[in-house]
Image (cartoon, rainbow, N blue to C red; front, side):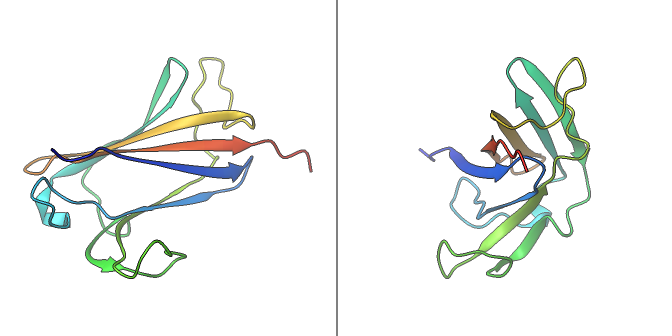
Amino acid sequence: MKRSLVSDAEVFQGAPVRLQNRLVKSDQTALVQGDFTSWTLKVISGATVHTVVNASTTKAGTFFDTLQTNNGWSRDTNGFNFEYVFTPTGYIVGASGEQYEGGKTYRLEFSTAGTSVVKWVWNVKVLTWAG
């Protein structure tokens, strides 16, 4: 059985965070752009779910067909094939319109659709910045 991919990140309030993963299919080969038709991102805060990317077919710049080792990747020498920069602008997750807030943890659920369905999660803890 394949283990779920759950990652954690911390970021100061108002700052972007770069999320990178090496995504694999059920046979453990690296996911490539041709393996799926679209992808989705949902940001969850408490009971509120905000769909940020809904069945996008745009893959370039986020999904890579060859493993990358740039942009701060330091986990190993193999590299990543997924990269997304989470920024606070536009991530309104509360019913009252509150934005990306310090002192909260947001769950980012990513998934692909089509031939290869892959799901992964980033738990992003936002640290308060008083500056």
